[in-house]
Length: 141
Image (cartoon, rainbow, N blue to C red; front, side, top):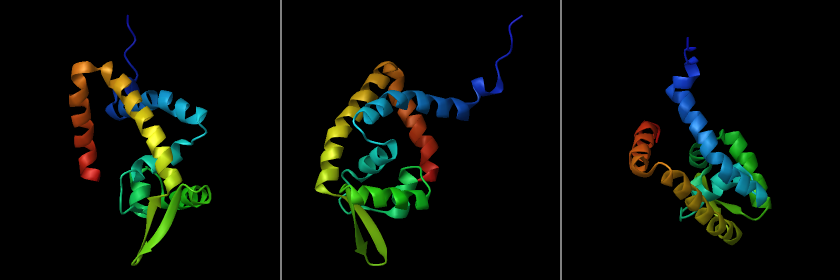
């Protein structure tokens, strides 16, 4: 008699988290080989093309971090010359420096290539998968 599957083996949220973990692992290894931490990548990727920059709160939300953790990360990234803070009225906006832009220009093509490899395995389902994920995320944005 076959053993019934464990709860998590068919639980959507587990499957979503596990798929994200598995899908990210290869790219995260590429980042590590380049000496770039995943949180740094997330900030660089989020700020790339964000002309006016982002607030710390918006950046923390986009990068899936708590705001105090983001502030500490930004302190390190500013010291490394990747980002700069600029007061904009009552808010502080974060922007990439020229060094940060160069890092983004190096890493984004690698991320796109990794994504293409993953989606190629799903072929016809890829657009529907992306649409489903965007629909799940939409209420949170």
